[in-house]
Image (cartoon, rainbow, N blue to C red; front, side, top):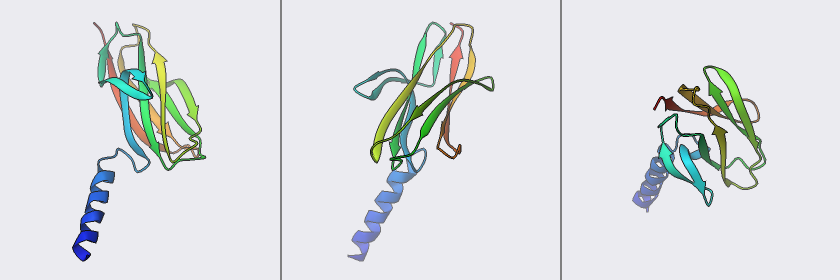
Length: 127
């Protein structure tokens, strides 16, 4: 019984260790969202792409206010608020991109206390 319990604890810790944050099981940039799931995951795109999505699978944040803050060259370009209504809540935001906005983009996931839970980046490159 002791070995079974230790095995279960190991599996739980391993699963959580793979998450990018204790309250975020997945966070990724994508070219599209279909049925609330990311399609065409990317970390860089060329500037012929006019729109990108940021998908986040939130865990145990029910009742809180969560934000996606889009940053380009240190400037806030957009901010989207979410109000999770369940313990597992899939959310996404998108950003329309101009061809001249090349370089590194960053999205911060923030909680209602303005704490950054996670930061992800992507490169927007000249074609």
